[in-house]
Image 1 (cartoon, rainbow, N blue to C red):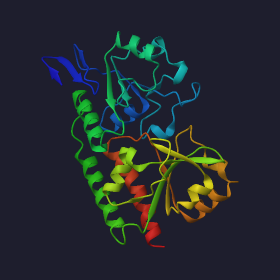
Image 2: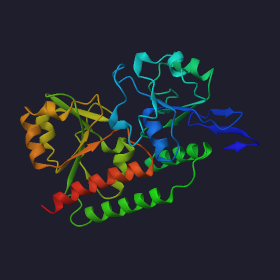
Image 3: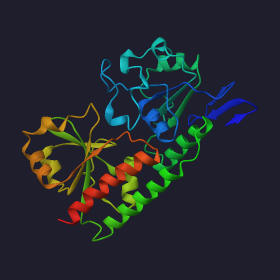
Image 4: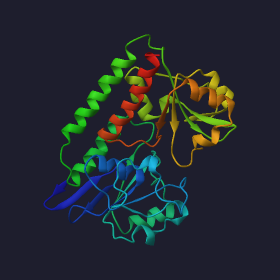
Length: 297
């Protein structure tokens, strides 16, 4: 919010950030930056996480429709120090967190030094939050930065929700089995535990039958061999397309994966989703197409 010219925003750590005027030069973690763009705010720059190769560009699976020719990339992991992050003079840094108070993607000492020099807002995107709740927090931040309402995008999202609900409602609830995973090489995959991922919980709320891996170690993922993945009998597979997941082309020699790919539609999935309405509507549309294709044989 702004009050008598001063900008103020309380983040999800309970910390109040203030500035003499509304920030206009925003540096954001890539997921946050792409989400803000979906709400009408173009960040000046973005940075990646420790999963990203420091010398590579931003992970395209997480940038959505960001105009990357207009948004600077500061790097990731060990390449991020305070001087690098402040190089282009940001007047606000927007990060994400997972309920532990940390700024994801930044070393604790770097984050601490950064907060001494520029306002830092952290929004919690962890499993304890709902997808809609996270999206509303990003919308609040965007409005505080000058974004206006986006009724067309909101309408597209509601339409996408209705279409998916209609498709999954055309037959028995368990007729189309949807599995989410992250390839981890030719020997194994990380199978998502649906209840721990806010966007997957939305699919469940809309009636999608999500396959649950067996109980065992791993809060968010169950790491199993490809034969075990195949034994779950998915009809649709949501596959992690982030840069640190194994590219699908490298799994061509894996017999169980090849069988899955021939029999089940593959939907690109970003486990670090964008929380804006347009990006979410696009994802729901892809799931709808895949489920519909299975239903129509």
